[in-house]
Length: 375
Image (cartoon, rainbow, N blue to C red):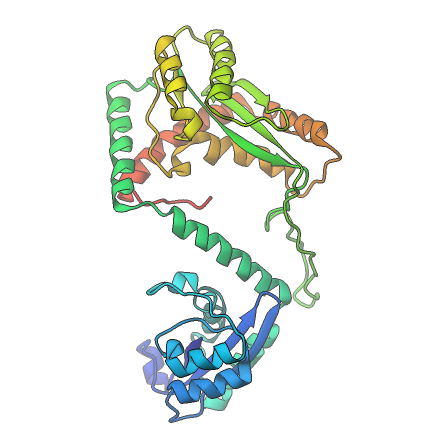
């Protein structure tokens, strides 16, 4: 990837906050383990396919696709050396690690200072590159994976409109009846793991500026897992259960869960309404017909909208925060810890969650249907 590094040409231009013509081009290549190669393009050198071939001979590794990078001679060189070229979607700097990770790190440090010469710019750029640690690059590639999923999950224009329509409908209902959420029960399913790596915030440590950066082993979620199904309202937990190992949450199973929920919910209110997402088991005819038969209305949930689902933006986050970074001996131990985490959530927390739910409808409308949080 090519990056232009610029300097202020003089104090007057710096005062005007204008970039100068004193600049140099930096080419970088890195992988998940760290920086592989970098070089500065000589002055007056044009980056054409012939020059880029020379770069590839020095780099001998993967390149991010651009028009220049896809020239036939470049592709032939890569094929000759058995180097596969990953596809890069057009107009997608958010999916190019150089663009969203490495170059911003360099430019963030270089912004503001006045450099007198190109060698000074190069020296500062080199120092920034050398200061990057292995875990920085590992984190970059982890973010890259998440960005692929986020790109897939981005709502279409039609889905954005559905999000806005549902939220406006709920806001109108709220305006006509400020208490209409009082008898709404919401719920969902989620996996909990024997080991779930701690968050970045949980793993942070206090160090002085002179302390060496701590090394952290890369951890991944374990394959030992148990599924939690939970339902609650604005006053607290109503029903929870763990899915038996090997059991699939299909329409038949979910209907039986709802039977148990219906019995528990009636202890809180004779008339109650349900909110859940649009998972196939939730929207199957067997389930919808059962809910109609017992007289339970279902609140609409817009597609691809975890930011509109209280279990996702509230309850599961609280539960899993208690689990992250801990390793459990077996599934019963996971389940006991989850149960303890659930009992630690107060009625005030649940009430606050429902209030946040209302404000999120307005946030969605204001955002014109765009997602406003990452999951």
